[in-house]
Amino acid sequence: MKRPIAPARAVLLCAVITASVLGGCGNSGESNTSSVPDSASTVSSGTASEESVPSTESSKESEAPAPAGNSDFRYSTVQRYDENNNLFDAIVIDKYVGSGKDVTVPEKIEDKPVVSVGASAFEGTAVETVEINDNISRIEYSCFKNCSALKSVKLPSKLTTIDFNVFENCTALESIEIPEGVTIISGESFKGCSSLKEVKFPNSLASLDSCSFMDCTSLSEITLPSEMTYCGYDVFNNTAFYNNAPEGDVYIGNVYYAYKVDTDAMDGGHDKIKELSATKKKTFKEGTRLIAGLAFYNSGSNKDLEPLDIEIPDSVVFVGGNAFYWLNLGSINISAEVAKNSASMCFGTYVKELRFASDVTELHDYLLSNINIETLEIPASVRKIGSDTLSLLTDTKTIIIHEGTEYLGERNFTFCENLEKVYVPASVKEVDGDYEGEFYESPKIVIYTPAGSYMESFCKEHNITYKTVKDESEFLA
Image 1 (tube, rainbow, N blue to C red):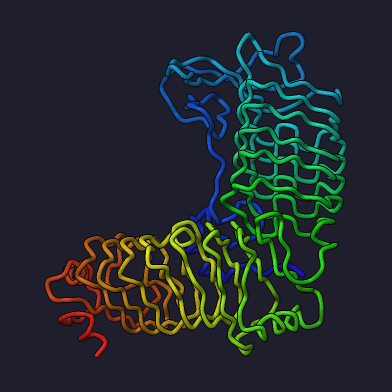
Image 2 (cartoon, rainbow, N blue to C red):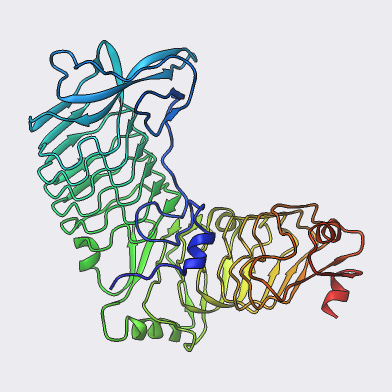
């Protein structure tokens, strides 16, 4: 069964996030985008790559036919900075136009180093083996997508990111060794590689984006490095590993990957979630480091079930977007590491109580977005509330921000259709965003804040409805 995406308004609101996980597979919203490695700021050529930036400095696209031995490629000349900040001319491969099935990407063309292979450069070609020289630091999105005959590829040692959809639907690819130094494997990068049986992950790997190995139906064994910091959703769904796993807890090393249910069953997995809720408390193995996005996904609302308490161990540093989707929780604990690294972890979740650790000082962007809770309290230890952290709170009627918070990011209190009362303490000294006359789609909201506070001035300046109170105790009276 296909997973539902978030409501359209949430998608619109959350489109800028890279942590969060609100849309479909691919450019996942949870966190991670491909980065330009090294110090390689570039000057744009006639066919600028993603890494290129406009400049008035001289640069040119190669227009003449490539010299003998390089006629298999169309390419552009760009400029890069070396480690000493000196400009040099370099080559970006734009398209493979040859007929050979065994291809080596050269170290140089026109006596200039080849440093990048561009987007879709080999897409849909009949290549079978590819060797990429070690000067290359970037292979751009969809580079080998739909190369159904590709059996073997040697990746360069300078690579730091496997970009989006790079090897998607390479159905003949049986194994891949990802070089040490790669930190990000982006969304859908190996999706649909149905013959892939072996993946050697580097110890440097930090982030696995959503759906990156989805539909790799021959992949039965997975060993991940122990120091990862991010795991999206559906990363290994419809692999032999996941398909053969029994229902219930699925771990991959220290990653809690999923609470597996049969979403194609008549009840959409509801009965299995009902069994879990009946246990009253969900714990995790000691040493668990990550909880993947959509870990507890099921295809129906569970508001009618027994409230389940979630106990996240202190070893967890990240909880993926929508991890507890549609569960009915009595309570959930949030550590300082989880609070500053996670986004939308309770998206669509019914929660009665949030238990913040005493050392939580920062709430990540979107951390509590779309959580279903009637009264939401932000503890006094919190100094910074990120953008959209308190947005899409459709069930929330009251928000209490305790004295201590100093900063409110953009778009908080927006799309909160039932929100009536928000207490903002005198400690708040900065609010980002332009809220002229209203907090968008929050028609009932009234801000309560001490007289003479920064928030009072902010409300006056932006024509926002507010009332002054002496302090929090008067607000609560």
